[in-house]
Image (tube, rainbow, N blue to C red; front, top):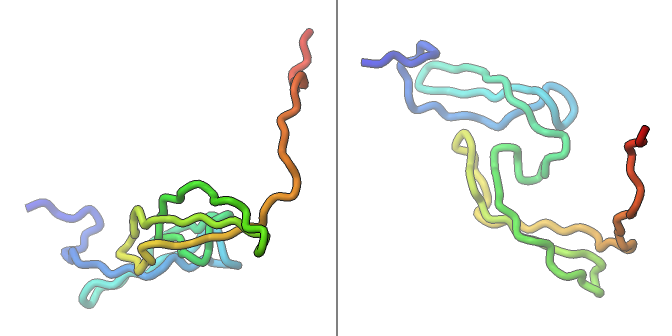
Length: 116
């Protein structure tokens, strides 16, 4: 019989959320329990992450919808792709952002490289 690489015989681990060591993102730890065993794993929450969904819920987002003239925001939805560490995740989430008031254009003919 193959031994587990971490030395634990338990195979029904329950993992908590990643808790950053300081502030609300960056390096931290996640606690796990199985029967009478417990451990901590290092984890990381990216600082640009959608914090309200939790770092363990991964979503596939569609394109942004049209700008609403009434609210001044646009919306898109995301469908749950993967729940890590048995996280409790919403099946569908919605996000909004303010509509852009400026039109982005790519500048042409400018190169950061100087020819010698």
